[in-house]
Image: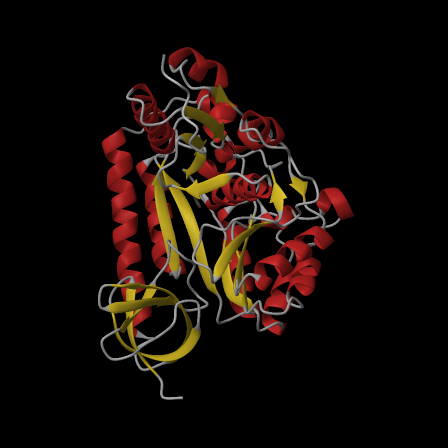
Length: 435
């Protein structure tokens, strides 16, 4: 008779998808650690928790493939248990239970206490801000709200994350203080929609007041804003950005499209004229601001004319940062009732063409930086280079600053002053300024 192994369980948390999932995994790991559990992130462990993404086809495929991969490991005896949580599980739990029944248990996005229980842990309410961060030590994501009340036709997020729910300012400040105490110097504020922050709690858009509170946290040097919405943008945020050196001159504002007929079908609540006016106001108020946006091509009914309108507008606006995605036809969204009539290869051609235009714009803007000085934070060392970022760049998605490591020694997580010596379309090369 085989005796049960007495080895101590090690829980491996695997994170897929966006920064909001990274944050959720960190909260889960913080809870497990507080319960005395041995927990790791994307390393070897005999118990696996997969935090899935269910946003678009590619991410759903990656999530399903990851689950299947760990099921094979379970069958081979390399892992003992596999639990699945996150957005895919929230959205498709009955289907997943039917298709992949040998997963030990599925949990939705709001079932953290139940997931902890299945892992032999208790949910500790007092752990505000206690997280095991998985990002480099100098920056961390800070989620200020959950869910979304926007009616965008193409988006499944409200199905998976529910209605918008802001976290109180005082709780966010406590979390920021704990992160700062652990050496975090840059906070990246995230939510499905930052601009909606506070409407439910304070009956007004309150992002500016939150920023005023966060700049007072000792040790934090940069605060970056991700995922704003163009409709109802609280312009007082720009006053704080201009006044407070800790607020990065940076805004991530997904605009999705610019053709009026597509914007209307997408239920974005805005027009080309209004969006262009808003961006011009941003530039006028904070001239040094970097704007990052994301666009969708191949939305149902997108004609060649709609696409040309978008393409010309991208050339005209000269965004510093831009990502372009092909439309994904998602069941239970408003747009699912429309015919997904743009062929896949046309979607891909359009996305590639937009990104080629953006690559040229980025190259031209980067050439203008040669000879200029910037404060950069060092994220990591890679080969012969230290890799850093300016305040105009977010981790993983934006430009990086490469500094020759054979000539200079720099510490990761430290800020340093550099001079740009050369530039490619998405990389800047720099040397450290003599102090």
